[in-house]
Image 1 (cartoon, rainbow, N blue to C red):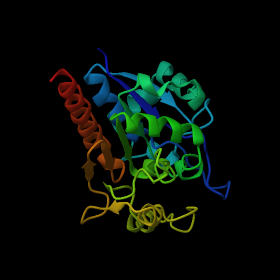
Image 2 (cartoon, rainbow, N blue to C red):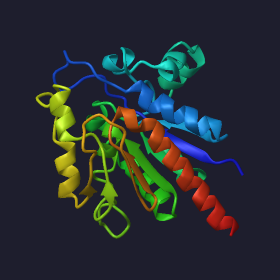
Image 3 (cartoon, one colour):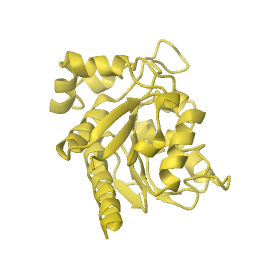
Image 4 (spheres, rainbow, N blue to C red):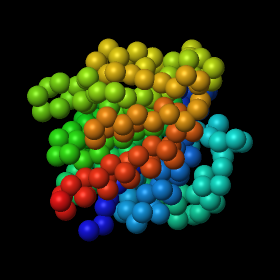
Length: 236
């Protein structure tokens, strides 16, 4: 049976200060999409509000603008998908083996309080599906509670864009909060790589998280491992 992955993207195009633009960090979607596609998975794009997805301008410049990102950006069909994403109420969580939260600073605004995304994430997680994120995507997990009212990330090992990386990216004065600190406040066992901006992925059961844009490919590969592991358990 074909496996299905739900990719979560943002609808936000700027920081609190409208003169500073942001949006989806394209390669965090394209790297994972490519890996999932190679494995024959069906994929869907969902966003908190549905509809169009702005792109982070910095992600469209060297060195972040790589082969997969360029190919997507040059493909009218792929770009049209980003203009017409599904909204959470159009998604049946039982149809998906995994959910993957992409990043970009924009997600700090619309991911955390989306009740629709929280519902989908909880349902996938509680039936043993894979919940994953890369970079700022973990903001989509910060406020998600399980059926027993506990935070999904409480007591779980995980990672995501580190505060030191915010400072080095010179956006620490622009971001609305310290995501690393918020994750720790919710009981997450937050980890990060020794050096900033290197690929780093943490797997804890059916939770898979990557630290930064450079971690997207490795995160997707770990998601595939987890999906296939689930499939073999069911066969066994």
